[in-house]
Image 1 (spheres, one colour):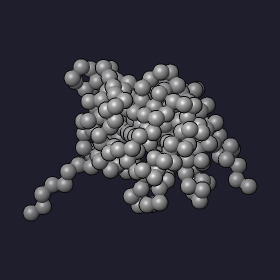
Image 2: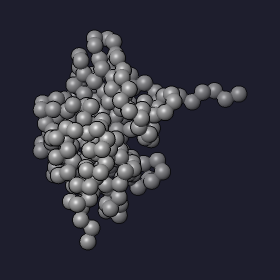
Image 3: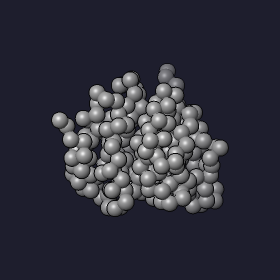
Image 4: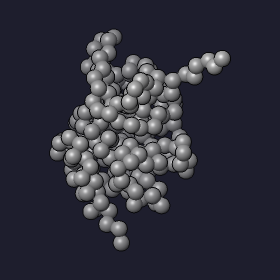
Length: 221
């Protein structure tokens, strides 16, 4: 029988720790939380593999969980501590939202797929310690009703600037996502200071572009 607890420990030790993730609280949550519950039953043995994992019926274009090491490093950079207001964009089945909630954040989990959001809502009720509000709407629009946010996490890549999300950041708040606009995709952190925003590259991070964050198609002659 497949031992999920052993697989989670190996995921943390062999993938996450080796990618400069040192936050002890985060590592403890990743080892304790049953990631396998957030993926379809027929893919549970893949839940700990070093790859982005589709969790919706549409394998080619569906919603996914980021690879464990990429998600963990982004979550560490996000700094979602006690009482922080966090918007989790492209929450899928809610794995990342639960991780952030267990670190003490108050999380708004935004998902555009109603079926996936329903699954996230069930899992949030089971594992989220009452700190997660799952909402449904266009990812690129964010969720104004919960703004401003201390931190925003985009669970995937963006080609177009996430301008509406940036507008929903609190003063000194920051957004972490994967910039696919030019060159190699890279995780970035963008911080707000008044009406200005500063960006810093974190690490290379290949990931699919989320719906709603694709660059407009140019004219073809």
